[in-house]
Amino acid sequence: MIVFVAWPTAAVFKSNNNVARWQNAGYKVAVATDLPRTAIKSLDASVPPLIIKKYEGYFKCMNAITKALVMTYRADIVVCAGDSIHPPAYKAHDLASAFAAKFNNGFGVMQPVQGSWSSERAQTGTQAWSTHRMHQTRPTHERCESPWLGRTFITEANSGMGPYCEKYDQYFGDHELHDVAQEMGCLWKHPNLAQPNQHWSKAGGPDIADYQIKNFERSYEKDLAMYRARKNSQFPAAVVADMGLGANTGRIIT
Image (cartoon, rainbow, N blue to C red; front, side):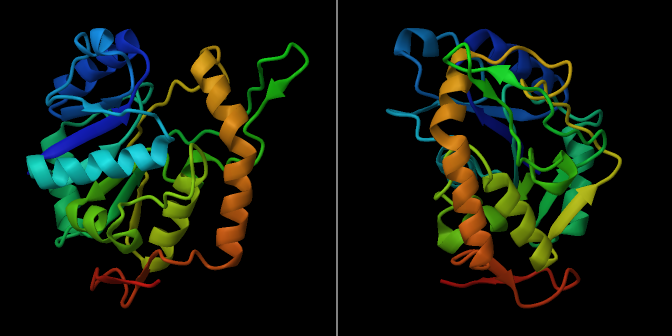
């Protein structure tokens, strides 16, 4: 099976270090970026980077890259990660075999939940008086922070747009993915796998970067309002289940 991990990045050194971690564990790596071409030349990956003219948020970016990996590079599974998310302590082939045994038609979502954490740390924003905290973000075992997605789920979810609802920018698309996949019975929360995240909102995590401040100030409250509205409307235009986990099939509503 062909397993890719993918993420967008604005930090060459940070991304390259993470590429090495995942490749050493047997994964192919793909990255997307809107960095200048001079910087892109220094990016490491298993395939040429997806070049974005203008970054419009994590979820649109990941829809584009997951579909490209399935269609162009014949990926069977794509792990949607970030340049701060580290691989699990198992080789790609072993986990791919377990995934395929669980979701034999590729219509599934697996989220490692060992070492679940909550967003606790507040950090300073663009103004000295402003602080940022992901105050409504659920613990990682209640959202799909870094999911493994099967080929069929990638191609069929959200009316074929990709695994994530593109109404979100940077936040809460992982909450909707969790809720929809759980409702369908195609969400596997793996209790014995961890994909550690060195996130700025995590206790003991790194300081927030300038581009992360911009993401937060632009998108957090807007995406939270979108999630609440879509949840109240039962997530229109998402994938819903015809049958349970045993049948492992789904249909799309609009």
